[in-house]
Amino acid sequence: MKVVLSTPPGKTTERWPPLGLLYIASSCLKARSDEMRVLDAFCENLSREQLVRRVVAEKPDIFGMNCSTHTFLDTIDTIKMVSEALPETKLVLGGFHATFAYERILKEYGFVDYVVRGEGEESFPRLLDCMERGVLPSGVPGIGYIENGRVISMDPVTIRDLDSLPFPSRELVDGVDYGYHHRDIRLTFGKFTTVSSSRGCPFNCAYCSCSEFSKRQWRPRSPENVVDELERLYDDGYECCVFVDDNFTLRKDRVEKLCDLIDERRIRMQFYCEGRVDEASYSLMRRMKKAGFSVIYFGVESPQKPVLDYYRKAIDASQARKAIEDAKKAGMLVVTSYIMGAPVESVDDMNRTVDFIHSSRPHGVQINILDCLIGTEVWSRLETEGLIGPDDWKRNHRIYEYNSDGMSRADLEALVNKGYAAHLSAWKSLGGLSDLARAMALNRTARDIVVRNLANPNVRRRLSDSRRFASVDTLPGR
Image (cartoon, rainbow, N blue to C red; front, side, top):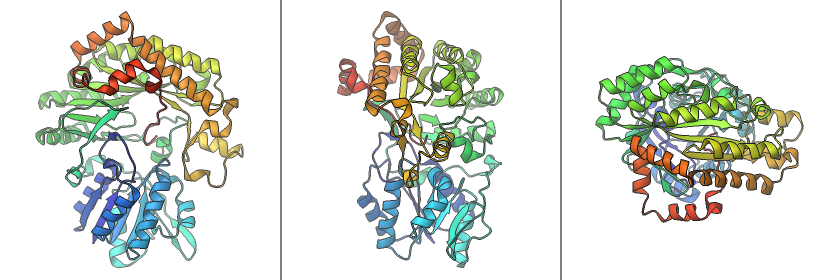
């Protein structure tokens, strides 16, 4: 059969390959002999109409899309347009949002034939087997569909042996120029991709749907398997790679072994990753930096214990401050994220977050107003309190839409802007200039970001106008 998989239409400057779709594609190619296409509409900045024209030109037997809560409505509109143009094509929906809202989707949108819940590398090829034989996928875990007016679905199964999966079929998106620009400033250079060395997270942060999606099961690939993939990427000319693990630094011995293998095989790439502040010792940061890990991202969220407790974050401000200091001391660039708007959070609490940003001076920050996403504990609390409307599950929400502690959108956005301005002012100081000089001396990525953006007019505008710098962020997929 001919299968086309696609990301939703949209616009982004964070052009990361659709790793989930590429894993599914490679698993299908390993198990079957289908003609497989992947369209990255999101990173190609395609409109709905442009994407539909591309799909119609392909005339696939099966068309599948993934979606998050942020992209669901655009995704469902696109699928409807495809169903009208290609009535014989079977339509499949997957991703985080589809996993948590599959019953509602199947009941309300009759043109969706199947929903893939959870990880799709094993279930999607089996679904194709059933389609080819003309039978319903009644015994396939994670596949939802309508039969005789009832929603049918077996629970999804998480994949335990990640080493058994073939590497993602990146050649299917060779024509897309991947890389990372943050607010019009380029942050990655050379041939760029992403890698997943583990899946899931054992923690239970209230604002994050990852724990529910993975049932809090953290599953690592072996260091040898990960470095086999990195070696292949290096041989193919890749220079920069982001590890998209929910919690890359969870097990120190595994990370150290991975670094040893990178050095042994002489893989000279620049790596970015995400870690927790309570799993970021100075010795580990030094070892990672030596192996090419130049940027680390920490979710700090707040320095206030009541707020961190509300989020079930299980860290504290002293751990966050030390992790930032140790990573900087090791020569890494540090990006930290914060959330404003928790129902237990006062204006004074948020101002303390602003003060923490200023005093800790990470190299980069992302400040978000609390998202209320289906599949998270925050969402469940709002449902319990009777604050969720009948159609609220279809789109992304910010906490101000539920009148959090009387804070308006304007109030929260002003505090976010204040946080960005505080971060910028911290770097316009003697200590900031000293930190910058040290980062330039120790970190190749820092040098690239500064030197290669010298002629970028967006940098000058941001440095001269903190209001432009202080726009509200939303993290994709979170």
